[in-house]
Length: 255
Ligand SMILES: [Fe+2]
Ligand SMILES: [Fe+2]
Image (cartoon, rainbow, N blue to C red; front, side):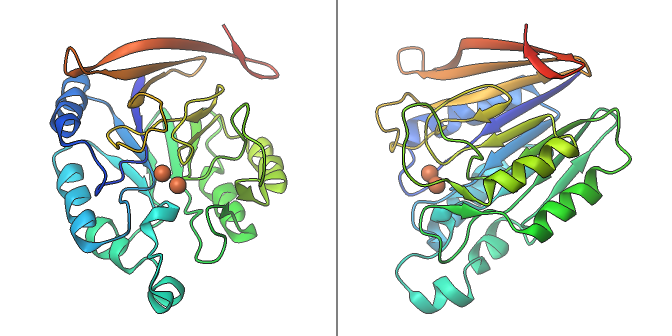
């Protein structure tokens, strides 16, 4: 079995300092095989905010898959936005915007969906989809996971723009591979299964949602996703709900 912790939308600059250390403690106690951070590490892509995000990541002594979000691209400086959009992410977080992790049981690919000109929406390119196909080739027995900032599907009750442009053709490719689980953030909201969204782990921009993260237990035939929510009274992350899935011939089905 592998244990993956999925965090999102840390938004350093708007992070609640009271939650940062308990989150680090929670992760260290859980001892996951991998931590996935699905973007929006900062509030405004400022150096100081990236430094805080880096300090946080350095306090987590486990393998990590980290991708940028729309907030990690400079907003107001047009030159920086167009030509140097990932400079700070590369400098402070990682030079690899599309990281990959594989062990004997799981394979996890990060895809950078943040763009300079799509506003809050993200995009996935044909090349990125082909890269996923290549990366996951010859891994029939691995549980295959993709981490993006922008989700490929909208949470219930949200209307408007699609959030990953080209989501439809992307979903076709992901189904062909087939990818088992999609981890995303962006909405600061938690929604449906195997398309997993994490709420914001520490940011005060929770839009009324409590701070949360997902602990995901992965086996070849079983996946369980436990949402943990911040409990201010106990000053810790506590299990809130668990969803279990089994692998059937036609895909993952709620258990
Ligand atoms: Fe966000
Ligand atoms: Fe976002």
